[in-house]
Length: 301
Image 1 (tube, rainbow, N blue to C red):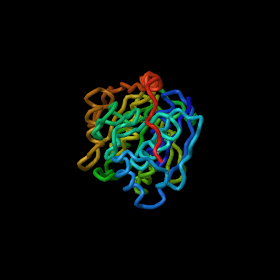
Image 2: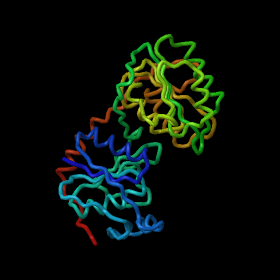
Image 3: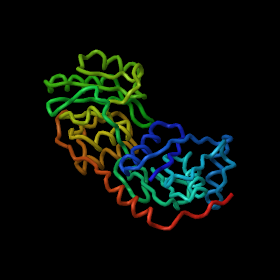
Image 4: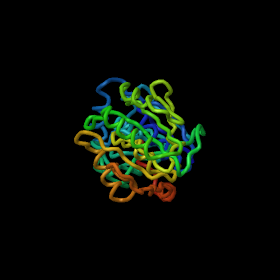
């Protein structure tokens, strides 16, 4: 079985599609898709409501005779997913709620914090393979530092407070990574401490989270649903989410739900013991059932 992943160029969206294919146990090919003009996305909503699927909105759509699935994450991919799937006789898969589009994909996964439909998940699809840079165990601690979002603010005081706590409570290895949205002033505070291993993303754009998941504790800031999903989807670490200033929006809804379910603890100056992990292995069964169902509707030029 093979999937074609439609990419809108956004790292977070592409990572979810790749994670889906990983848990489904299928090979994949990634193809970028762009609209011919800025109005193309607007037209995609209208034509989808009319059940008209054409490749004229795009620079070029890739058609393959050897694909079984077309997978997309994000509103800029959904019309292309349906169009390619209909032309190729493949199944269509949407990850995240396809708001504004007809819900006639063959399979939809979406998140509860985002007004979910189809198969509703408490987290994003997330999988980060280990880099093999460092080995951690139960006596060690990891910190994942994000930044500001539309509704949340990471202050220098907050990250210093957490780093001070880590260095005063954990005698084992201490590791840290910043992220693409981490402000430089926050990175400078991180660099004031003597970590056993550190990644400053602005200088070294890699993702070591896969190496961090077997630490005893993993601290992660509240601003990123992707980073939190990674933290609760693998390894054996107990997860501590660092609350930030602001309304919170979808991030806070997600964190509150995961805390209630035992996947994480909201850091309040004390440590919890939340090490439950979300199991994505059910995806293979769903996919097997879907592939045995009737084919997608025929392509309409």
